Length: 250
Image (cartoon, rainbow, N blue to C red; front, top):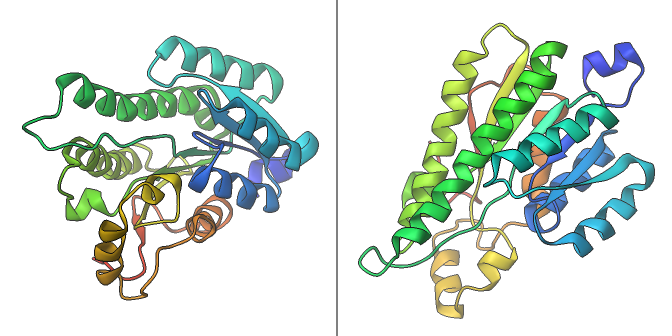
């Protein structure tokens, strides 16, 4: 729990983008278990977001915004400021993957993938300015991916985005030096989500052959690391923590 929240007697607030399913939902549950009020962000998936918030009772709240639209980000941040007055933890999890070979991928697809990183950058900027710098405390946790380090055929824009996410983490950590705001990335490997479930059986088997633990990870195993970074880990800053069953390490 945030030290400033303890001192004020308020419950700390965590915001998870793309919080309605998969890794995002697991992060929301893990943070709620740590004592946070949790803002479940979604773009279109209102029903699963509402169902997840219902699990948290008064400690869950919905946030809807298209993160490609700066105006919608501004409105979301204004709403949080009015209703809750604080954000202690931001988890930049929202994203998707455009898959195609470079010779056939459309420019519009590349731009749509690139907009994910811009949205995370702008939301982080606004959360810092409105909440964390004022509180002189906070945690920013960016969800990247192992493929941002290894590369992956047919996913050039996605791997570029995830590599850039880790670069943002490292640069922002330096910018925030001395402000008591910690910034880290969590880079999952292949996790049991809708994204990996859509892969062919042959592709899934190829992936498993590259994972020393011999299985895909679970969303909850990524969320455990996010919760650790959100509530403890006071001397981890500007780092990329890999959660991939041993398929890649540094």
